[in-house]
Image (cartoon, rainbow, N blue to C red):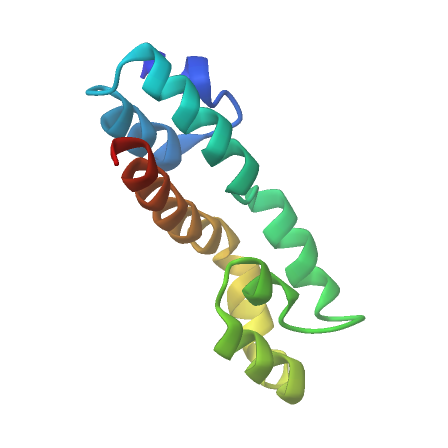
Length: 115
């Protein structure tokens, strides 16, 4: 877990283990390049939680737009977060939403680095 902590110190829990597994085979330069790209694209779970909670007062679905779930974002937007049920579920699962998005970003970034 040392490499992931060195290159992406803001990652926590499952994300840290996932990144450590992906970074173990990269050279130091590739790991630094990966970290620069990944850190600029990743979503912090706290931002996902804040935008989800804003769905109760302002506009629902912003968290889904941030994580490139455009279809769900539009659905939440027009149905008030599926009558707030979807927004409540997202508020409970905000860490999983961010982690799933960050996995996709990490895989895309690794593909860029390796090609």
